[in-house]
Image (cartoon, rainbow, N blue to C red):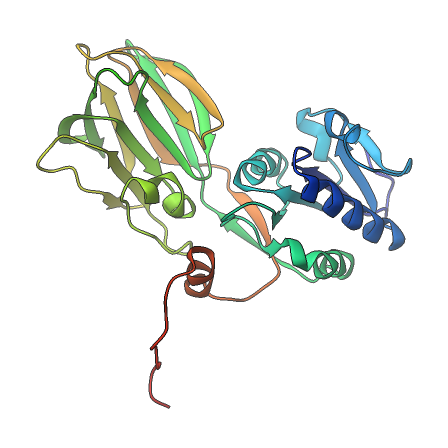
Length: 301
């Protein structure tokens, strides 16, 4: 799949189950086409979107984004994570417009659509890279599954009836054995996602680190850990425990038989995000979680 030389094209991904996304997609497409920028969408979304005939439809193959300068995603966290899959595979920056509740990966809100179109047209954005995770699953010493994540890889119990018994490891040394609901291994980007819900710390995106956060562990020592970015984290599912499951970004899963070993390390391929604003992560954190800051006076001037 190729794009004519000199032509500008944007790949649009939308949560077609949301009426707000349908209207937002229509506005974004109209704005881009008026400015001579081509739009490409997935075939299975095109039937739900109000699109003119000039919009190109493609299948969801790895080359769907080839030749595009930007991936624009309209939706909540799940849609943004789906867009991250295309962004990682292609190296094309992702620009997220949040139509959901929190949307930490998003750079704009639904009221900013005109500004989003303007910034795309004028290339008024910067690109930053976010750390990812590479995930290996071993069974009987053999690699049986490979995956990746931008937020987290979570080892979890597969049923509610019994706890999952695991031993955690950092850099080939054991840390602790406990039973519980599982363990989250996360990036700084993922520190505000599942790891946050499990009681982990919020880590600023520019900090290079890996997180390991136990989930509802029955143990005296089951604290969140923050390790070096080049550390290798491992979770071993004990032989006498029931099967578990590993989820990557809550989107892709594979069963973990008793005795399986999960290894998590810094990903070899980052995800590139388009940024429109220079607001600090502190301000983003306060806004996204509606944190109370009344009474703050700031440093004396």
